[in-house]
Length: 540
Image (cartoon, one colour):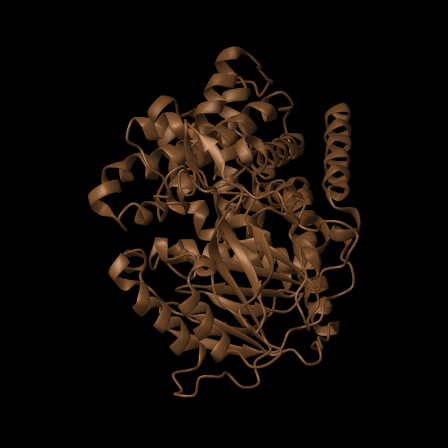
């Protein structure tokens, strides 16, 4: 083993980068849909040993210089590029929906986005270098650096915290309960502490390959922490009993409409009829008896629902008295604004709450839009040279500014999260009023039958555990589901079928530690880790 460690740390230039890239690519097996998190016990030590080669001289003395930081940044970037390239390959499928328009952008999207996100891993490798010391101290330094870099990835330039390493510690089941205490940003720090621990057993240049028992202390401690977290999560799930909100029967509609067909003008009528038929379960009767809340996914219909009286009348005829329709819909702003000398109307990606007469009760406008999907940075400039966002809405969607908490008749208020808004753990709760559930409307049809929808669903489940709230999810092609506030799946539809879920609504759990203290838990973890690093360094 010592020879392998020495080999990994001694490689330079393209061989070093190639090994780091491969380690990063294999790391993606830890996340959805594979969930093989033990692979990180191999890949993170490889990263540590390669950084040892950057930051230690032949005598295992720390060497910090511009050259060592540059070399470490290249290793971190290669690791991150492999990680994000294999984890986000499915983004390219969106560019094939209208291949005649967007296919030429596919190679750029599939490579440039992972390359940009990998810069945060490069940053982590450089931050760690400022604290790189022999032994366990370097592992604590790497965990601190990754935690800071991942927090920044979730916030800089609107943020994109997709596939954070911490999700490997929130695999389905008992381990997911960690999130109720630490949140995903705290899990990022713990993940690196745990998964890098085998690197404490061997260091490059030690010289003596003999096994030394004292080196097992830190890996043993991390194994105990992992086992303890699993047992605590198992106990929490066994102890948790979930009851349901009286008088609420949800019907979640999954119409399974291919994205290529959705926006063709000639398909508008057929798509609306598909929604109506699936909502009625194919029955000839017009009303849907017994349903209190009918839920359609993001941007359900390829037209402005508010401006289509025939559709509103048909919906009204189908809905039972006292029932509610919650649907994703495009919304045209009613206050016209001047733009470039002409008149334009802002378009929002919205969620509508409508009564059984199809009257609009309330709405929520999506606030966190997808760059290049729903809007273009420097919109007018890029449009002037012929570029378009994937949704092809001229001028792009307009970001909403309203509160996420949405009131709905005959049910607790919910937090509205459209599409990838659910991957952001910060600022989900808004104001003093208590939400009763999370509602995630999405359309993952853009990404086909790839890993993307599974990753999205897993991150949505983690939000439910963090917040202690049940999560209701309506997705065009799946995965549509309801989970309880502990992330357990109450009801689920597989992908690529047109069907409905009829289910009650679980009650919320008591406030989690994460809800009570939020980012303070993450800050405390950072402080404890810094103090630990200082103690280890001073002791040496």
